[in-house]
Image (cartoon, rainbow, N blue to C red; front, side, top):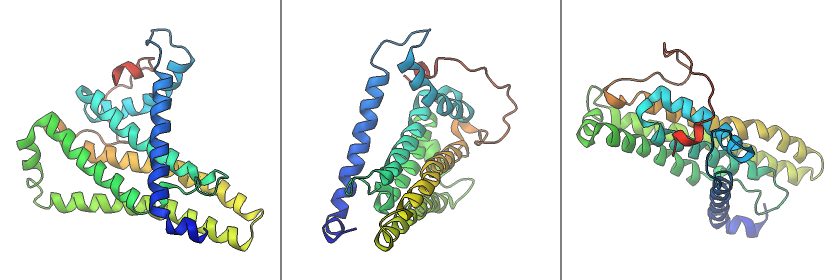
Length: 237
């Protein structure tokens, strides 16, 4: 990273994150521009393919709140994934992933934990949410703070570390090795959004939505698995 990029790094991170957000909004508008139909076209199929997994997670957490939970989880996954993938672009300024700058993972983690609290307040009411913060676990607020730190440090450590290795390798050997590192970097770039989203879903599952603990991601819920349908988009609208 040159001196100019290092000097304006905070601004570059904000701009890159804003560009990722704008791109995702544009893609969402494009894929849902036409009215939804029972026989989906290519655009609707693409949108449903993306949303189907999040709808499934939301149903396991709280079936009556799919329209709240599924977009909440999908937003984190897509924002983090596209932010990470900036690191493979061959453009010097754009190739700085926002998630390699600690403020962004920390902000995402804070929003994730506060979002879980807000979703519980919407479903169970403000009083139940306040009560859950102190009973039956009087250290629930400490647990929430630890969730923020674990989410942010895990994401920053993986993406920031990979980006730093790539920068150092590019200085030592500008040709060949950086390409290998960028290729290997696709693994954490794809895995970390999934980990962040699954942990956020787990926090929701253990928040006692509706007065009871839901099955966490990966746990057996005891319910029969529903057949795949082509209504994932309509369920979150």
